[in-house]
Every structure is written in structure tokens, then in C-alpha cells.
Image (cartoon, rainbow, N blue to C red):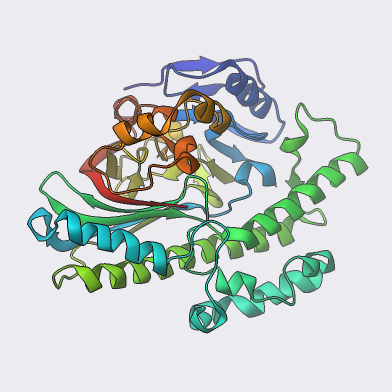
Length: 398
């Protein structure tokens, strides 16, 4: 499908791939489009919805500047998936319940982390020297990050919110594993520190913005290079975190399912990150806030909610979206609204056939709180092509 709407309230247009955009999100998009360093246009994916400062589901190309709050506090948050040699015939409810319990024991979720003796120390080693350099240049960060092994113990942990681990079946009844997580507490700490610095810089330079969360670092200024170093560190940490969890999940499955091999390329993609790219004749910084890269041939993952289908896709390289696509279903309502509207009975009904938590603690993640993933996919037929359709049979939530 082509672009559905074009907003012209800002300095550059906003191109939107859906009819379903709340008014507050449109205002955020217009605010983004008004900034002097936005390159060419702002692209809003079909899962677009209200965020903090920058709209979730937006792709923002910027000339010689980066907005830290647009990258967000879960730097490098994203997905990983791979297909196994198992099929539906190798699964039964009893073994899947054991898999659910095993993953729940082996992968810390929420605020939990690994014990010291189980930390992924070897995987953490390449990050230590680089992190020490960042902290030495920014001593206030030592208070929350330095002198602790928390960031090492959080490697291979899920976190909370909308993060999840799933065992799925595709259209041919082949088994996949898929998970969603990011850079954990240390990514959040780095993000919040630099977001605050950007706000202070705006105040110091007396730059007035339509939203304080659009505070930015221009290239060549005091904090720009340090933020780029920190954000790339956190993005790589998020990637390593997902890889560590894949190891734990595969080990959990091997304890309760027949012998198997990983039979597909591992698909791993960020959807909250910034990268240097070339678009519309210029080298720019591209921030994907709730969007994945979808160059021609890029493999990506677009998950639904905990009771809906997910998709393995191949990018089509559409330049109008800055070669990007949606990152998931996108929220239809806030967490608090979902908790007020839905009951545990609703959750049980909407997740029928999925082994998962069905208690009040995860009602904010109920499928009804999200947009229709199939409508999202229909709206972005010019951005990706579907390779596989997945449906979960096990879902472990943070």
C-alpha cells in the first residue's frame, strides 16, 4: 500500500503509512518535522503511536544532529529469531509446560538478574574497557554504573514491559524461537544521563523547542561524540544480551524436547537505535524509534502481541520510508487503560492455546491493547515482503 497521509504542518512533510494515528501523535510528528536539522521528511510507520518526545514508529533522518530521547531509553531494543529442526509433531502440552517453566527459571525477567557465578563474564569482557572510557569522561555516571557488576549480571536477562521469549510454529508447522529485549538497566542509565545533558545544553544555548524531549546534540559540540560512543556501546550490548538469551533458551529446550539443530539464519534486528546512513543525496543520522531497517534483502522480525501472529520479513528497500518498516503491532491504548478495561478472563480468552502467564500482572500486555498486526502488515506491503508467519505456543513475559 502507498503512503496514506502527508502532514504539512512542519518545516518538512511527514509521510504516514496508516489511517490510524491519534491526534497527540500527529502533534508529536509535526513537532519533529519543525526542527531545523530534519532531513527531507519524517516517516511514520503503520504501527505509529504516541511516545515521549518523538513518536514511536517514526523514522527520523537528521543532518549533523541527534535527539537522544528519540533514540529512547531502551537503546538497541530489538528482536532475534531462528528456526529449529523440530516440528509440531515433536511438541506436546506437557513438554511445552516444562519448557515454559525451564525458561522462566533460567532467564531472569523483570528486575531479576543472574547470580555472580552465572554471569556471562566472557561475553562481557569486550565491553569493559570501552565502558570504563565512557565513565571516566562522565564521572556522574559512576554513581549508578561504576563499581558494580550489575550490567554484567544483566547480560542474558529479559527485563519487563513488552519484552518476551516465545516458542512458535510457522506456516509449515516448523518450530522457531523468538525473543524481544534491549540494553537493560545500563542502556537506560546511559540514555537518561545524555537526555538530561541535551536538555541542559538547550537551556544553556537558549534554544526553545516545541517539546523539551526533542533536545539534541549538534555535531561538533561538547557532548555529541561522547553520546555517539555511548549509544553504539549500548546497541552492541543489547545485541549481545539477546545472543546470550538465545543460548539459554536453546539449552532449556534441549532439556525437554527431542534433539534438534538450528536450521535457519539467525535474524537479529534493532528497533530503537541510531545509525549513519545515506538517504536522498546526503549522509545523515537515522533514528529508528520503534522501526526496523528494511533495505532490499534485509531480514527482519515484526511481532504481534502475546496472542497474535508474528512475521519474518525481507525488506524491499523503499526510499520513502528511509528503507525502514514497522517494528510490531504498536499499542492501541496505554497500559493503565488496558488494566482498567480488561479482565483476567479476557486475557485467558485472547491467549487461548498459548502457554503463558494469564494473571492480572500482565493484563497491560493483553492482545486487545495492541493494534491489529495483520492490518499493520497490509499497510506496509511496499516496505517488506513476508517470508514466514509465526504463531506462538509458549510465551514468557517480563
